[in-house]
Image (cartoon, rainbow, N blue to C red; front, side, top):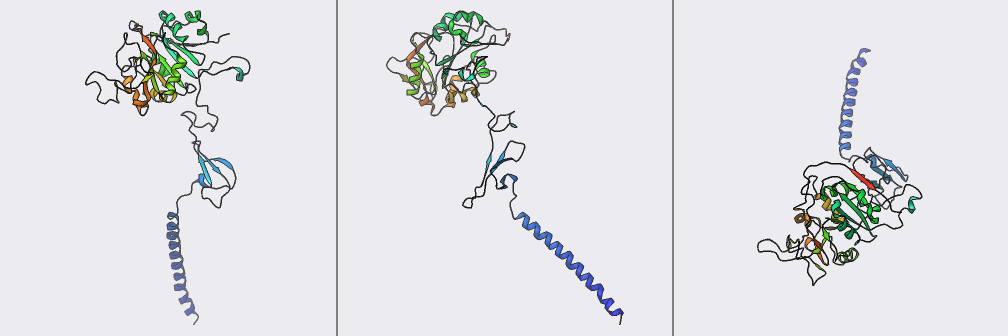
Length: 350
C-alpha cells in the first residue's frame, strides 16, 4: 500500500516537465512574432519630454525633443547640418560657408573696416605691357567693383604707378591663363558676396563702355550670362557677339547656313564668347564647376555655358548699347616654358 503512491508520482513529474518545456517554447515563438511585428525604434525618435538637443551619432546629426503634443504625432524634429567635407564634426552654426575679397586692416575695430562693400567683381588677366590699356579699363568701373588682377608675367610692383592699384588685389602666377586662375581663385563660395563677376581679357578697348549702365541693362533684360557687344569692324568671330546699333540687348542672331541646328542653340542663341563674359552669382556657381583643372585657353567653353541657365536662349545675351573693341593683342603665345611662382599681394590705399 505504501508503494502505490510512489509509483504514481513519476508520471506526474514527467508531465509537469513536458508542460514547462512546451510553455517555454510557445513563449519564445510568441515573443519572436511580437518582436518582428513592430518597427524598430530609433534613438533619435525617443521622446525625453524635454526641449533639448541630443547627439544621436558621430555624424553630427541631432535629435531635437520637445514635450508630446497630444494633437500631433510630429513631436520630434531631426536636424542634419550640411557642413562641408572636413568640418563634419563641428557644431551647426560654427561654420562660415562663404568668404569674399573684402580687404581687412591689421588694427582697429573690424566693424569699421568696410565703410562700403563692393557689389561686383571684375578680373583682368594681365601683363606689364598692357598697363595703359588696363588703366583705362579699370577707370570705367566705379567703387562698386572690386578689382582683381591675375599677373601671368610675375610683375606686380610695377603697377603701383596707378593709385587704384594700391586698392586692388594682385595674384601673380607665371604663364597661366585666366581660366586656370578662375578655377583656383574664384570659387563660388569666395565670390558669393558679388552679384556679378566680370572675367575679362586685357586687350579690350572700353571707350564706349560704362560698367554701371551695363549692370542696369543686364538686370533690366534678365541676363544671367552676358557680354558687351563687339565693334563689328575688328576682332569679330561670331555674328551673335556683333554690336547692333538699334537695340539695347539682343539674344539671338542668324549665322551662316548650316551653322545652327536650332535657332535657340549656339552660336545663334544662348551664346557669348570667352573674352569678356559677365556672370551672375548663380550662373557662375554652375560655370565654375564646368571648368576643368587642365583647361587652358577655354575654347569650347562658350558653347557649353548654356547648360548653366534655363531657358538659356532668354538668359544669355549681348549688351549692344555698352560695347567694346577687341584689340586682338597676343600675349601668352610665346610663353611656352612654364615656371610657376606664387605671389599674392594684398594692399590698402591710404
